Structure formats: C-alpha cells, structure tokens
Image (cartoon, rainbow, N blue to C red; front, side):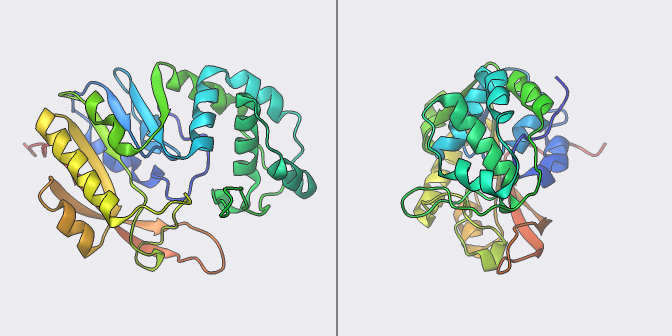
Length: 272
C-alpha cells in the first residue's frame, strides 16, 4: 500500500520527521515493526512495512480508536455522519460517554477534528476538556478506510512501552517517541497524557534500548535536546540533532525553532 498520513491531529506528532526516517530506512531490511508510543503514528503510516508488528500506547481512548478503525471503519463513519459540526453540538458530544467501541471512536475522531488545535487533554477526573476550536471541521472518510486497511494485521494494545520487550526479535524495527520529560520552555512540547513521563521512565527506556541492541534489532528514537537526555542515552547508538518548528497552539504556548535529538543504531550507509 502507498504511504498515507495519520488520520488524527496529534500534539507532538512526528510528521516532520518522516523524510529523515525514510532516508534512514531506505535500504534497510527489517522484519516486524513496533511503535510503543504511537500517538498519531505518523511514522508507521509513512512506511511501506514488509510484515506485521505492534502499535501501543497508554492512552485508552486513542488505542480504542485505532482498534475500531482497524476492525470496522465503516461503522465509525456511520456514527460520524450523525454528528453536526457546530459549537453547541461539540460540547454535547464532549460531555457524552458512549460505551460502544465504535461510537467511542467516532466521538474521539469528532472531538479531535473540531477541538482547539487537535490537543488531547484531560482534567484530574480524566474527562476530556479541550474547548471548541474548528468551525465546520470534518473527518476524511476515505482516509479512515485507507487507515483501516493499513492497520490490518497489526496488533494494537494499551500498555506500558516496556511491555513490548519480549516480542522484539533480531531484525525488527522499533520507533520510539516518548513524551518529553523536560519543560515546554525547553522543547515546545506539552504532554498529552495525565501522567507525566519521568526521568525514571527515560532510564527504563534506556533499558529497553539495551535490550533492542542485545537481540540485534534496529531502533530510531526521538527525544528532547537536553543535556540530561544526552547523558542517559549517549552510549546507546549514534545521535544527530534536528530542528523543527514548534506547532503547539495557545496564547501561552511556545512557538519557533526547536531542536530534538535523534538516536539510532541503524548503520550509516557508505557515501560511495
């Protein structure tokens, strides 16, 4: 299948990194693919993956949506067609709590399309609380169908990132995009989940990379360009620094050029 783009807007998404990952993996032969911080899964959708693998995240609503789109995107589309794209309807749907898997996914996609800057944010009670922001926003139904086909055959799980370790085998490819631990003043990134990713989590992630290197798999990791991150991951593979535009919105949000570290154990190709 030809590369497609993510079907959701996602703060901290990695669509900007797609060209670099394409360059890194251009002639790389790999087996299964794993993405344990899937978010919008822009890298997954950009790759022409040879086999199967697993996408995972700790955001239950996100994981449910991916599963529902994989299993029956047409049922989600039927629910979406019942929704109106106006401010009053937005807040009614935001307050709803559907139990059906596909209706939950339709609600998630509707809110993602119509919310302010596509942010995913919950309050202390775990309730989605992003205000209305997009007038007459719509969900691309054809893209949902394409995404469903792309996801077919892939496992999608709600779990901690380290849980994938026993699945990883020699020759697999793992893309790691952890929530950034340092402050938004340093990175322009705002965490999307109610539980912050701690420095101890970063050290657990370093342990996962040790496991990846031990079994002979490949990894690509993006992380904050911060001296603490460099200290934790400096011996895990080669590192490059890339710049991107910060696209997080809001009156108090940081915008401008932001540096990020990219770590990988994929061998550099010879220039000859």
